[in-house]
Image (cartoon, rainbow, N blue to C red):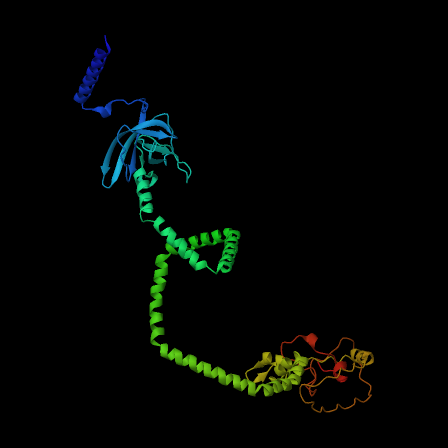
Length: 406
């Protein structure tokens, strides 16, 4: 068979294959392409894109530049493009994987690149029927977009104004080179300070973020508080004139008070100095003054007399010990009382009547242990005590005779 016959037979076989494929409804898109995805079993994943560019079915699906699947179907759902891909079952990807439409070369074909997330830890495992949402998909910039942006810069965009900007800067800094250099040094120092305090700044920003979050959670409470302030602010606004007048009067009062204090300062100091001796005497008196005041309320009776007053009567109990042996023993053993320390009396001293001297008459003898509970005609002042007081508080006859009254 010559070469021409071989070519004709090849063309006939190709046409027959194309006709057969068209009859089955698959078309050329159903034919396996060289270098395509593996034909083994896999799982299906749906991916959402804002723009799929010129991505077509049977395009490759790659992980780390290795083909692991292919695009099966592309359709539109609202304003979002949805792509169903088939991935080889041996490929393991996290459930929060990302997808992007990329280009194999400058003028090459489009494909979908799947990868693990970079800004967050991997979670779970991608499985059949999962959906990669629009928030985790993207696309690369097109060559046409790059050339269009470059064309805008070159044709009256940024480059056309660079010369003007350069000339204006040179004219602005002309003759001010030292000032510009000093400004740059200060700017460098400022940036260095910011760099040194970077941790503090980040900490302050984090604290502000936490405060903003807390305020956002309590927005209703803050709103209610602001609404509750409205009546008070309204009252303050209505009484603004009165408050202003009060503050003005207060200022005048302060001026007058300052003048009065300055004018009476010496007299005030002199008065305080004159009070100093009185205060010193009060300090020296200590607790004697309160005791004297307590005694004055019941004078000439002791303070505990109030417990013995019943109606218009006073209950008293007197006990006299007239044992001759005890009297003589007390007279002989009595020592002269110690002279009291001189001190300033709180009350004026009153003259006391002198007691008559006791004649040295022989006393009648009494049997030991005998006593008289009550002697008619004996002055009741000796041994007087409130009714109910302890008998141990009463002195003996020798003490009464020597002038020491209980």
